[in-house]
Image (cartoon, rainbow, N blue to C red):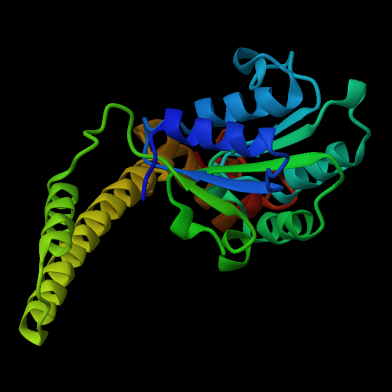
Length: 267
């Protein structure tokens, strides 16, 4: 069941007031569901930093890891920096908060390193993972976080399937006499509803996956322009010609003299 951002925050706020917050939460949902905003509000609640400053340099005792490398992955060095920061003592009794945005972009080594933090969280720390594709995360990480699935903001609250389910439950309550035939028909109705919901979830997941693939795809093999192609051709000619060749000396050199094949400029 997906929550609205407001509903999720109210539940978390009450949990915090009862001193029952878990050490790790996985906030998931499609783009536009308010994952970052909910994380900022929760971090503000436990840390005291204004929610508008949580993802800025002004935040204190709040540490954020997000894809920054050329491969758009979260690398192990970022997780090690995060872990080191969490080991430091928080100032003025603040609770330390670690936020991993786009957690599904964790490199395998980074995911394994972060798993150790999930298993042995530092004192007075809160770990928040944000992801539009939680199914891409390792099961070992999923099992150590409490999931908070969010629905898109502005998403209609009463879907057709939900209305049918409510109607079916109402009919069940009003039924005076139960029989095997009625129970069988009821089971069939529930199965139909579950199939419809499962197909809808699969469709939404496939669509989100395609969006992520488009977002992070390097665009396939990049086409060379004419100048680049000429440069590569010149490099190849230099490799084939003798070093003392007069023709070779007239060619502009795009490769290192020691190892031409490795130092050719490829864009």
